[in-house]
Image 1: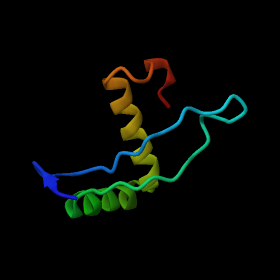
Image 2 (image 1 turned 180 degrees about the vertical axis):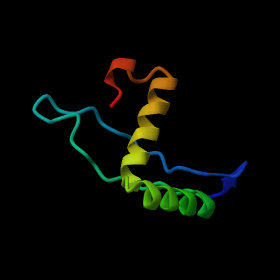
Image 3 (image 1 turned 30 degrees about the vertical axis):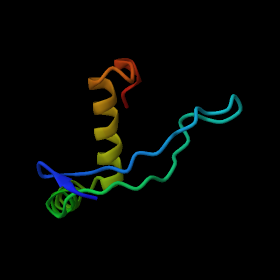
Length: 77
């Protein structure tokens, strides 16, 4: 995938809405391409703070969903 303006492209996948009996908060695996610099900085941040990289990525996704009105502010965290 091409890198545009220093940001790595993300593969977008069609996501079906959860069936009534499925937990919408269940974790699922996804694949995201980010720049080597972002990987190194995230890894160093995680090492220094002892917070998992995946936790930082989940926080970033929630922040963006709130920013663009796709998630109510009270749902953060």
